[in-house]
Length: 236
Picture 1 (cartoon, rainbow, N blue to C red):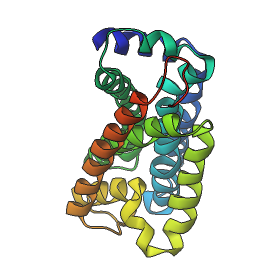
Picture 2: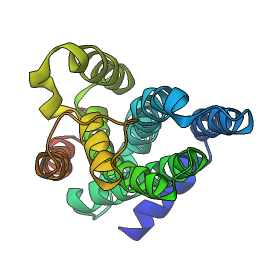
Picture 3: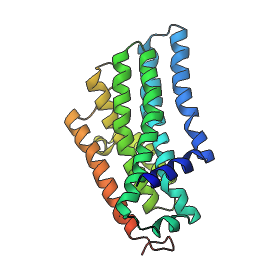
Picture 4: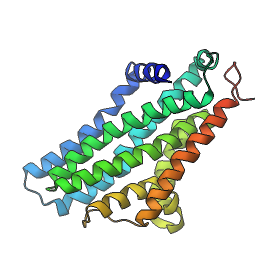
């Protein structure tokens, strides 16, 4: 499993896709730094930058790029066949891919979110955002890894989830919030460091439990889905 994880990490950072991970986190920290440099109160920019950009855009988009990239590209170019011919359980393949996706997403998003919270004047808020980002990375990665196995256009499917389900419906239909990873992230951060910048719509217990469900069910379904692939890379 460690060999698969190492190959996956090399493949991920060896593609141009890896360059897509940098602009959004840099933009997030840059905007916060500019506001801090000009003495703008965090109450005026915190919600727009931290929530509107950080937890609602940077975190899910980075997770989408990485989560669909660790396996989706291999399915597209047919190299998945080489992995499937190895004497490895499908479980180990998925767990290795998931570990890489979740780890890369967590680091790439938790660090800039921590810095943004720190620039907002609170190390506690920065730590809360970092922890919430890690939990969000775990849940999003499981979901988007599954998308790469159930759709030929996983990025499009992921964007529909982010923009339509979490963005559009999440703001107007209260029932959708219980299935929104973005809401779990907001809740965890808000409960750890209560602030007017972040508003949560679900309970902490619900956020933690649903995050765990996303991770467990997403991984199980991904393992089962990969198990249905034939050596031609098509589902049976």
